[in-house]
Image (cartoon, rainbow, N blue to C red; front, side, top):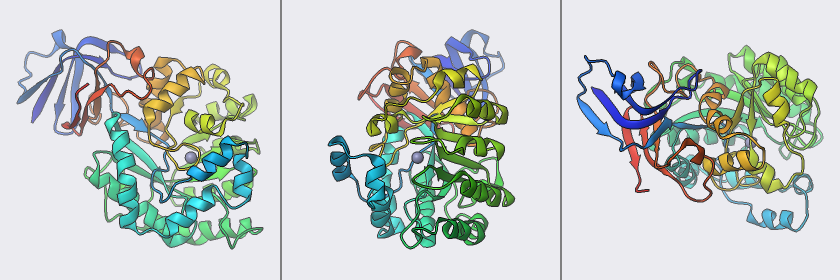
Length: 420
Ligand SMILES: [Zn+2]
């Protein structure tokens, strides 16, 4: 079935950043087949269905390329401690932080996790998000990590979003391995990774992505390289094991210290490095050389009240692609709002509106190894888009607590409409 989406201002987010103020898109089933100025619509196009968009703006469906939205419990009491002056690192050392969410998550079934997490995912979907990365990392034992990944996959069937999963078993050192971090890393590399990498997914995305690995439980492997978590050498060992199994890698690093994480990740060809507040110019040069995406997480920066800003000017100067993500998690980024992250990336990090739009579309797709199919409006790409009741593109990442997204289209079908 051929669908014409007409009378819309189209921001393609393609390589030339083309915008068609009086634009149109033609989709066939789940794919875009034509994008351009409506006046240039080929004469032979005979749509089966025409959808009138009343001049509204249209962008690719947004991509939230870094979330921890599957978890149980909440950490409001720790938030109160932090606002009273206790640091995130001190809370973590006292067994709070990630370990407190681990205790709640270990006690939850897959069904519990799906039920608790679905509202968070739907909140992102309502903001125009059509692709979401979801990490494990609150289980920190084999079965609980696996349950988180199964829940993430089930969410991808229940909500109108393509879910990409990351195994983040190296998120924190679990109880039982204190002082034996190396033994924990060894266990993940030797046992958990091979088992999870082999496991096919009982809940694949409704429309398989281009890659066979989409039908697997794990799409990529992530780690937390910080003084309070894992060393660069330990994360390097994890990456080598992941890559030997054909899994791409990414890394949380340089959020509160610099122990060589981004440089190591670049050497392993990581898809993304996330946080990067403490990244230096020599690290940035390595990221640029490797083509690694720098994922900015301004909500976590804001909630932790860290005075150190990520080196946006250096990332820009060296041509490192920058993505922006919500980091939705119960500790440093409670809630689930990519639009809030977009606003903060502009206001607090000084990214431009155009950089932020790229950061939640084409660059975010690249961080998830989906650059050939997602994150831009071009023939051959997925027919995933968001329609905005705004007067200009500059309003994306401008509003706080007001959502101007009025329609979400996924795989060529309207999955959400809102009066705005
Ligand atoms: Zn994170």
